[in-house]
Figure 1 (cartoon, rainbow, N blue to C red):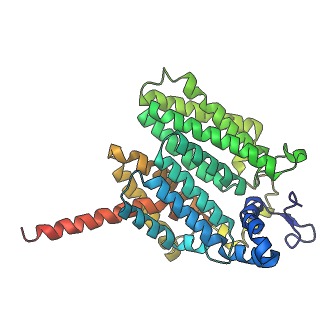
Figure 2 (cartoon, helix red, strand yellow; figure 1 turned 45 degrees about the horizontal axis):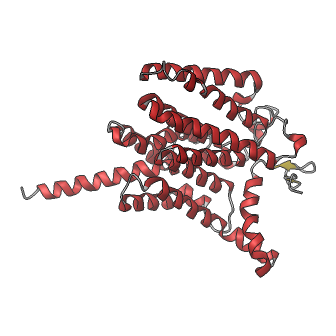
Figure 3 (cartoon, rainbow, N blue to C red; figure 1 turned 180 degrees about the vertical axis):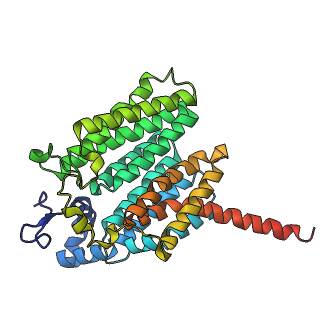
Amino acid sequence: GWYDSSVMLLNAPWGETLHWTRLCDLVIATPTVFLQPFLGLHDTVWLTGLWISPLLELLAILGLIWGLRLHLAPLPILLVLALFTLQPSIVGVFLPARPDHHGLQVVLEIWVLAGLTRGGVNAAVVAGCAAALALWVSSEALLLIMAAGLALGLSWIVEGESERKPLLSFLAALATGVVLALAIERPPSDWLVLEYDRLSLVQVGLCWILLGSAVWMLIGNDWANSWQKRLLLAVGMAGQAAGLLILFFPQFFAGPYGNLDPRLVPVWFSLVKEAQPLTFGPKAVVLIAPPLLGLAYAFWRLRFQDERRLLMPWLCALLVYIPATFYQVRVAAFAEAADILPWALLILAAMRLRFARVLLVPL
């Protein structure tokens, strides 16, 4: 049935509940509804499984175009798209015949960052809905929500009133979206169950705590008329949210596996390659050096005020994902996705510099 996501081949003979299967099942099943009358059930499921990952990559490309078209000319956008499709870890999650929930997570990450880059209340709502879907897929989306909250919060602190509504709109869409997702994910009898590695009351409570804490932005709007006061108010809101999380969900800060036997987690993770920490070596250089360079260049470009909206979401995503990659190597795909815009701007700047030097030679 719909509510049974257990796989008996895992943790035999008791089975194991997959935390990421529900939305991925919907993504695969939806085309099946329309194609089954023409191709039959077997061929429809086979074709959907074959092409769903490339189609998800196309959806991410559409999100990039939507988010960047107000800020960049067609040629820079084309370079961003090329970099996105050529990132090593991203290639791996969008291979044909390999449906992967990490690919779906990358797509939703792109739509969140694109919405924040585009700016405005409506785009913030789109970003909030995408973040809610990502949290429905798995708890890995907590990193994405942290990056989005950091970007919106810093923009509000620096810019002031103009960035207040997008932040509140993002949190409202996120909180509403996870409630709807919980109603679809679980039967009514499980709506109050607490699980940290799968969508439950814990994640719903987190999102509503964030939204409730942000209400202080409305209460203290007249008082917070400088960036220093807004920073102080932001620290207070973050402290309130953390305190409420500790009060209602004390195991939240222990991570998604905090409610498991601590003797089980290291044994389990030792057998999962993508859950291993990233150790220093050639692999670490390949995976981390490009995001680090992109992060440094994004920081340097932030001194131009007119580029803050363009770069802030991607910069904050890199600040979150780069350290997380050292904790678990599977986060590298999300760091690479957040790196494409800074790298595209860096390449364009290098090309302009080279052409300028060539023109100066005859002089």
